[in-house]
Length: 297
Image 1 (tube, rainbow, N blue to C red):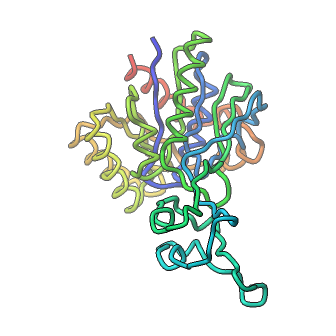
Image 2: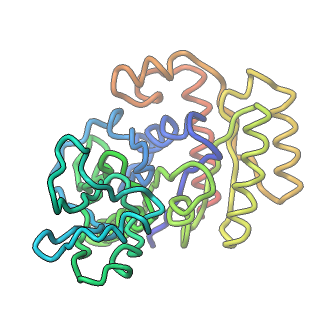
Image 3: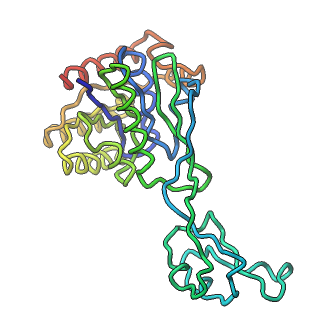
């Protein structure tokens, strides 16, 4: 039976991806999915070899049809995103039609509705690419958004769907997902239907607050949730408080991971912490994985 674990955090920079990379080294029969597509960096550690790449279109954007446009300017006045404008005066000629800045265009469709000349079309926009790759730990599905492109959660859902497909085809019984940070749409898309969520937090006031927000989100969707405190020894008092507050919400703490410069050194060497060092920090992560495995059943 395939079990899916999603590792998330209340914000970026808590060490989530480093822990995912170590889980990848410790779990023998799995597929990896990097759903943190806004700032994907799992590939920096796993050095994947791309087997296939595919364009991703998450929506449509406006395009002005020059042969139909009468340059009336209604679209310019109606665009709240200021994505439509006439050419600069220096390059403008009589009858110059407006131009659309694709980076500013939100795809709302208002311009098309106000245009009386049917001079605006909506065409699929390529927002990025997604990949199926091979790593030294097994298959991996990941993606890269284009410059200034937004992530609505559709790309995250696509990556998870492909990971489940690969797991079924190759008889893999674990899916390890590097989820998006925060509590927005990409996070919801990352955790929906998962068997277990691991929240990686840190012993700071912001980490404590972010954990509360993420815990409320997973509770809303009824997903079993655990917590791991990374770099706990930087502030043991807050670490203890986080554990107590998590226990009050019936969220078990599956382990603490101490601060160690070896984590950064492992990233520089493009490897996981548990491969780079057999020290205490590796033992911390191994214990977290053992507890996670037990929780998954």
